[in-house]
Image 1: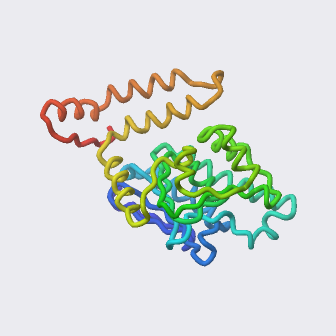
Image 2: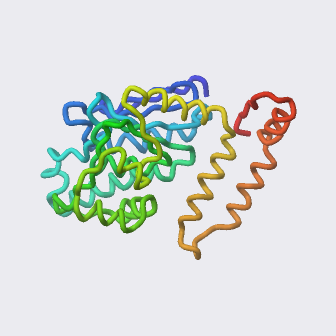
Image 3: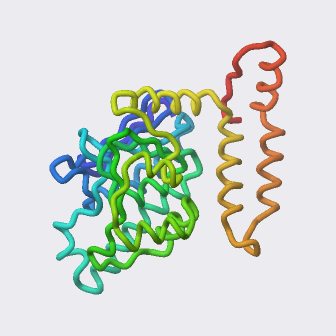
Length: 269
């Protein structure tokens, strides 16, 4: 698929492919990258394309400019989209579709965070597999200040990530966290000085480009099964995913490269 071209449905979401990494960047700088309707709608479209593109091993979400990852939903659209009952339902379905498309995406995803990561921005970040942040990052879930109801899936992602006590603390108080407290809570996994964020991101993109995609995909899918209630756990699927790894050409390449004392070249087959 060397001629595969990504076309974003809106100029408020930029996208480009850098070798094996697809970058999706929210671009609403005037509103600190607040998510407008067209931005929500662009995410599933782009991820559907990325799922079919064999070159893509990692999808990175980021925010344009230097002040925000995502500062929440675009409040200027609330009267149109979140006032009337029918409009609220449509908006929630749209946001749910976008966030679940990230959560269910079979390849690894990473949120690279600078500045404000508020409300919907937190939801995007915790829908990703990994989160790294600059030291200037600020996190908050301010729904209680707006009287908003929060979806089950968003609350579950937060609870699964940082535990019920910390999740209720953030949700009930709507307080802001700096990057260090977010790191301590497990909301993010790495933090660095702002000027070092590109290098930290490069560390991840390089690792994901070099490591075996079948193994990574299996680990992601099995982790998802682990988080399900035990009656819903698909152990047969987990066992099949492991067999797929051992039966792959990549496993043979990994063994051969180890014996030959060289870096393996994995092809995802």
